[in-house]
Image 1: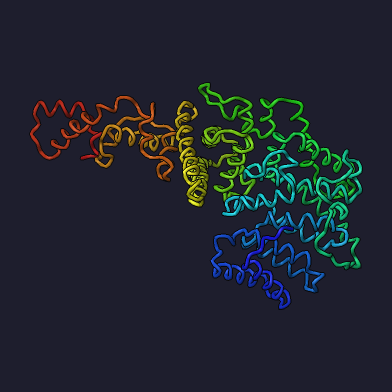
Image 2: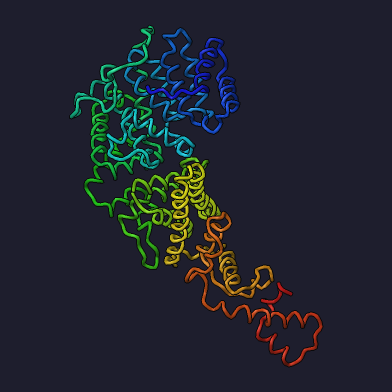
Length: 570
């Protein structure tokens, strides 16, 4: 285990040992560690600290041999993860390569590891936004050899998430097979990652030889819990979407993994004796078979009925292609699941931005394509309210919120992250990072310009037609040189659509500026004469209301400008 110690981490290690001896409550320990980190001037590095994760792994693994109560060390680890003091992904990586091989001799430690994994193993979104996320990804890659095994560099956040999730699930499947001596049935006849002590060349901590009276019972319980955790993960919709990316892009490794999964389903007495449904296991295997039996053009039909009919095509005939559509269907699926309550809507902005980044990285696509896919999916979400499937209760307001708030904020989150990376770089690389950030904004602008080609898809629902028209009228007034506060808004007959509302949402969040109003086709072409026509027409009504005599010329002006258009101004 490579040392990541610093003076603060060394202090935290000594304090943790003293806290165990004094049986200090975990919350009090976590508060003291966080306070000490702030006092040491390391607050910027303490969140998801790699050094603290390594220290906690050492304390947990050496708990019994040092004479301290091992349960206390695990409680401190849980408190550190809950408070975001240590990196969950790194801590669990360090523990997995040591606890899993020793699970027979240390069943209690393995049971506690499974609980930490269940609670914190897949909360990756916030970790990927930490200041030290690059270092954490590299350390995990060094320990698990993700880049070497899967063939893709784990330096990219999206690629790392896919590889890490598949790795953790693979470890659990191999462990379950090993518990029932089924690894011998695999072509390699061994686990991909160590599941027995002899699989590792050096073991740096000495485990105690404690043998509880009911050690065999604990081992059997752990086997059941391992199977249950696998089933729980396969039922998780976010995890299954991540696995679908692995299936599409890592077919060799995916084949090895699903072969093991099929062995588990067919031969595991623990699984067959459990009350758990086999649907998730069988569905994953079935999907794997379908991937090899059909092309990507029809693959998206297997994902979700809501995106089966050309998810990225517009009613006026424009289409981004069937294979392209299949690559981005997880966005459609996530947005729908936020509505039906099948997954928690909390942190939806971070989850959505993380999903878009993961898809962009794994699909190796441009940011123009990624942003375009997000807008299309969000607009389609609104359009599906025209033929609702969820029953008599309308969800249009929620769907509009997903389009104009959540989707826009997800884009802002992606760009702000790029901006923050630019601010953290040294002067030699600052210009390169700044150019990358400007490119993101340019790709956003191009995606919204291209979105205008999907005219039929952008038709607003009746309840927001007025708002869309006002957004278009606002743009028309600015282009024509009329002050939007002059009161002439109602006199402009500009037809808007949902793109106008999206652009206004982006402008309000400083993602675009009003130069968007000058995009070709954004407003009608007759606005140049508007600045001259409107004031003279409405001035006639203003003069009439002030008591000006009704002359023939004034009558002509009044007739040419209906009163309903002038009412607000007057």
